[in-house]
Image (cartoon, rainbow, N blue to C red; front, side):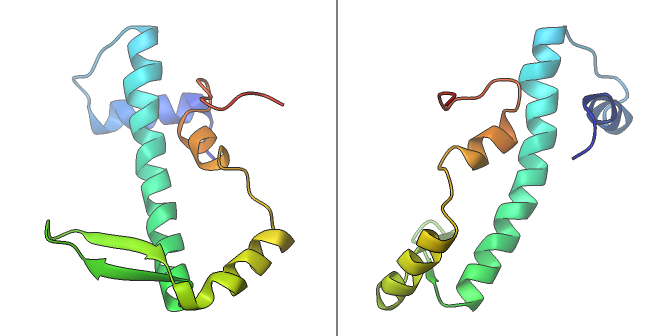
Length: 105
């Protein structure tokens, strides 16, 4: 992951007229950069999980894709999670490094 300084410069180079307070930079700029990066990671993960048939995708009435676990693969999903346990907070801390929303251990 790029340094915080590089993330600020990335935002400013893409929005040369931008200016904000330190709190605004933390809350809006850095969060936006992390969300964009996390979005690409989530898209790649959803594509991989769909290709592995661990999750299913369907078109919702709102025109967006909706994802859910494949009931026929639930045993395989649980085995995978036992081998590689993941904290539900990991994806949140990717987005909010400075402001974690999950309690510290």
